[in-house]
Image (cartoon, rainbow, N blue to C red; front, side):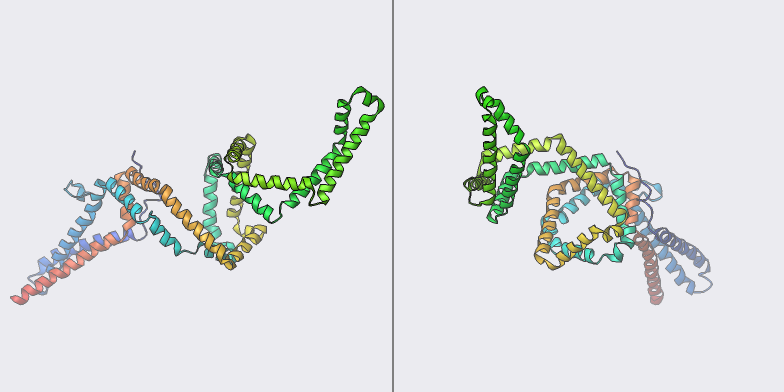
Length: 421
């Protein structure tokens, strides 16, 4: 399928049409000058020099017009061999262009060298701490408008589905158990788990107080008729509730309580199993998969993406207001942190560099294929116009230079001929 030219992509750059008219006008001027000087050559010998200049300039202009035209089309519509070079070889041009990109740009070594020269973190820090024109001006009128238009133009459901699928795939690929085990071990090493134990014990005590009637009912139902008749079931229930409450109080107040120590020992075992036990890892992965596939999680991811999209749209529509609010304070603080924390800046730059290299490795072939297939899908008129416009006025300068240089060469030859008699 050939893709026709589209308005906006194939408009001649400013000055190209004017330069083409100048080159053609200069050629026509040489033709006219040649015929005028030819009729006046017998009037004065100087007209011979003019005729030689015009004749050679005319030949040079026609030759260069032919050469430039032959690149993109058949001169005068005649199927002359080895003309219309670009249209005839556009598929090969697309392949060669794609291969050129692959071998010279989408190479990990090239990208790594280029990315090492870029201080992405420093640039972001500078922009966040000192936004150009108060985050308005050109940014608001240009980049922010473009971002807003792109976000609004993309299908929210399809894009959201892609984001959700990407997030879910990333979660599926991530081994949760070792990470959780490492986090739990680090938390216990710094005693950050103790407030959690205290909170759990406090919650258990509150739950016991709020549900003591359930314990009494269970004891009443399980007790025999004799205990119920004598009222001892109530006494047993009170003793049981008081004992549990006292146990929880002792665990909360005594860090060395045996049950509390056993709970901490259980957490240490859990941290070890999460990191090294294959069975525990498999159970966690199975639980993670069930959680990801849960409809509630899918709705959560949908809502998360929609909230993020709305936030991006709000920032893009009015970046100045966003920078004045709480988000602006956070972003400025982030910029100051990037300025002062060189270790963090190096980490971010290294991450960006690895991400760029990863994109080249993972999607380089797709990018190359996209370039090749796009060029091949263009019709001959489209690729001719786009390449001709891309080169711009330089081709017309070749015609002008050929006309003038040809004329000067002809003038020199005629001068030498006259001098040698």
